[in-house]
Length: 100
Image 1 (tube, rainbow, N blue to C red):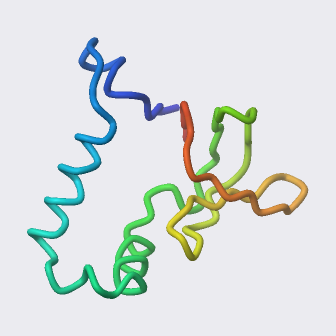
Image 2 (cartoon, one colour):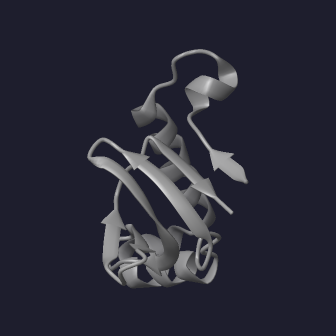
């Protein structure tokens, strides 16, 4: 089982979430300048590369734990998780995400 975790745990020092986000966005804009005005194009690009689609997921959030299967990306880019009772749970942020 693989685990996605925080930069803090990897580099053992505090990182700035906003600085990191800015770097990711700046890199994306440099690479794809024409796409920034069309979110549907960006969302479709992300959906074509959705690594978590169909994978078993265990997610820890501030609201609790979620287990299920990756069910794609929602209209706002959020991760969708299908639970064992066939509910679709949107996940915008998580403390930890484990996948199989």
